[in-house]
Image 1 (cartoon, rainbow, N blue to C red):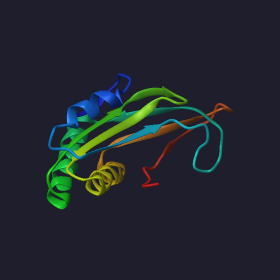
Image 2: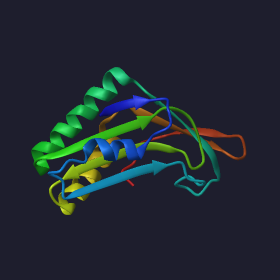
Image 3: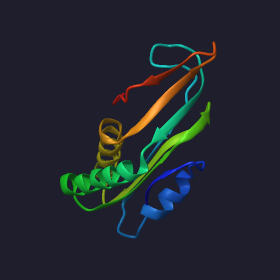
Length: 139
């Protein structure tokens, strides 16, 4: 499963999708809205926008790159768009593989590449009423 959605994310559904009897490991990542920005300003929510016609194919290429780089594994990645409140999940990734190191490596690779390559934009909303579009970062 590779998708952009306006619906709340279900990490357990992704884990179920990637888990097979060939898996010795399943690693997962859930990105959530936190209460402070990178520069420590108080945040009360985020808005994500994406261009799905470009974003989904690029996400598919990232998963293909992960297979080429790390070997056989199963990957699911979903990014949410729209208005998100504190604590809500914005991105979910699950990786099933033969061994834990591979699962962790693939999970990290996918989130880093997603941040660097996929046309998804984040707007931070601050508690003082200001808002600012942020560049994607690998941190």
